[in-house]
Amino acid sequence: TQKEHETGQVQEVLEKEIHEAFETLPKEEIKNVIIAYEPIFSIGTGQVMSNQQIEQVVTSVKALLKDTYQVDLPVLYGGSINDNNFERLKEISNLDGFLIGGFSLQIEALQKLLP
Image 1 (cartoon, one colour):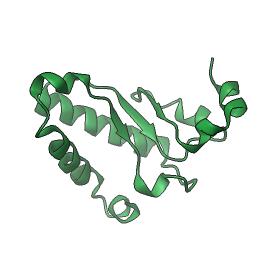
Image 2 (cartoon, one colour):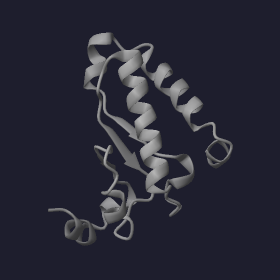
Image 3 (tube, one colour):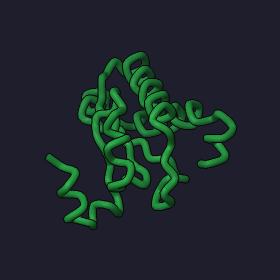
Image 4 (cartoon, one colour):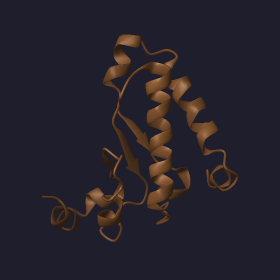
């Protein structure tokens, strides 16, 4: 949430959510998971975190996955992705892709951004 983001609780919340999601998942299935990080306050609002903030979250999620579950899973970012911020977000080096919501309905604009 915005409050968790502002009060520095993102790491704690994500760790809890990942552990809860994986606790009932058979260990042999964990390697098939794709993580999508989508801050609640960004969904459909136009509020997008800075590249540095996203990169920090992705780094910590990947470290948690490697240290706790011994896996290297892809991490996607979602949350108000559009033609105005797509190029900037593509610069995040440790990001494996995007979870595109409402912008996916704008076919012509999306096609211009994809190779």
